[in-house]
Length: 347
Ligand SMILES: Cc1cc2nc3c(=O)[nH]c(=O)nc-3n(C[C@H](O)[C@H](O)[C@H](O)COP(=O)(O)O)c2cc1C
Image (spheres, protein in one colour):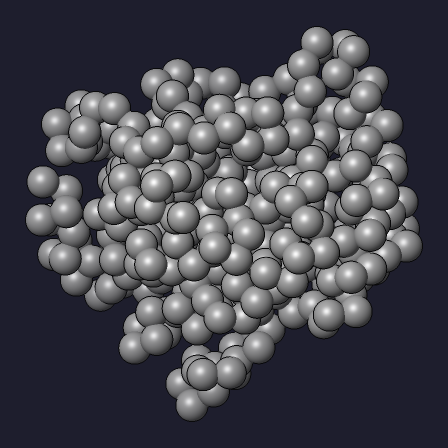
């Protein structure tokens, strides 16, 4: 039912500016979920084949990428669309407004998005309250955490540790976002020295929290697609030596290849959607070959069909995530990928 309605919904939403359309659709989803309407329009159970990754049982291989539900206040409704996991955030220690508007642009012909949101969010404490009040979602919930804009890079570790400690009792896995292009200097934390130090501190904290709470919450890093082979080799060594539990490849790109003639191409920010697929998958494949299956990878960037999702798995991913194609193709894609990514189909 929801699939039949989506083309009409999309037509209406695309009349609005992208950020208003985002807020309206999230509000609409929450309302439809609470009223029971969304339940009538979607299957009652999560579809697909369950898989174990990072010691967690994911009900299927498709997840929602970070950035759509930054606050974690729409988990139950988004879960209804069929996602086996939902990554909320990026959340920072303190609330912050993000960059001035406009900061979100559609490149419709390319099924792409440019964003420079800049981690607008209500802060980790509110994020935790929101997650605790979502009771109906049966899948896995990841927390994606970042540093506040005003925190200098030398103190970034304090921001990550603060969010890590607070999220630990509530999260199924925690992602350290080092790869947003919209927080000045953030990507510098992907340097071998900085990331090794941060990983060491977080692993120490994880060991302490594991004793305290009696369970290990996997620690995951999310990387950019704008890394060269040398950086990928160095980072892979850091991740293997440091005992990283999982990797997300990739975030958005600064590259404008393939969209450079578009009138929004000059907007500052990260590009996502279809034009990101090839580059992001190459980076995933390069990490996978360096990590030799020792660290599981979640593949994200440019997936807009079931075949794209299969390609991510062939390149070395265990799970996939989407964001931009949910806007362009609608929720039908989520169930199509959930059902299509079975063990048998990817051999
Ligand atoms: C509007 C927007 C906001 C995003 N915000 C975040 C974020 O806060 N944290 C993060 O790690 N990634 C963020 N992302 C990146 C996505 O999680 C994903 O890595 C990227 O969009 C590539 O996937 P896609 O091509 O399926 O959209 C954002 C993407 C978009 C389009």
